[in-house]
Length: 174
Image (cartoon, rainbow, N blue to C red; front, top):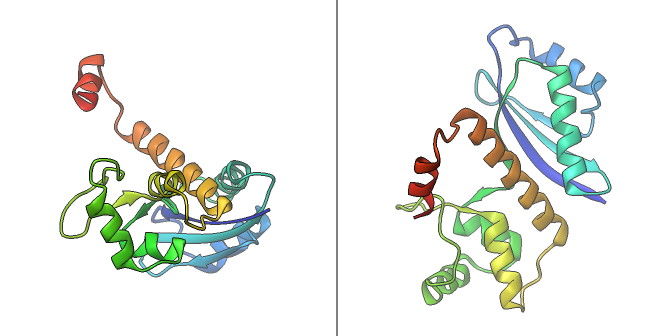
């Protein structure tokens, strides 16, 4: 099956020759990715990777990028963090319909990662919630990829910000 996902990286100062990076990525097996370099010091790779599972696709891409650019630091794997418009696009319904579901089912709708003028959710959690409600066409490949992206992002943040004690963890889950 083909899985589509994006990996965003921060580049080291010495990795500024973009042509050389693209060549190294291709040689490392990332020839199935579109390379984006809109912001200096950043690299986005949109993969369209054939694999037996989303986990295999994403993990093999992470390994391939690391072998090509060892100093690159993962910023984010996606699809993961989304707004209501993004969810609506994935599901194929209007943003207003998603917003109405969120407002009507406040007690069961997934809790946002960030709440504010622009709230953000984990795509996998919203798609899972919609699947339990039924009546929505959810692409299983997208859901599987979103779950893997969420796991990768959580693992990355766990490394960046480790929980130091059981007491700190209890505060988070209380």
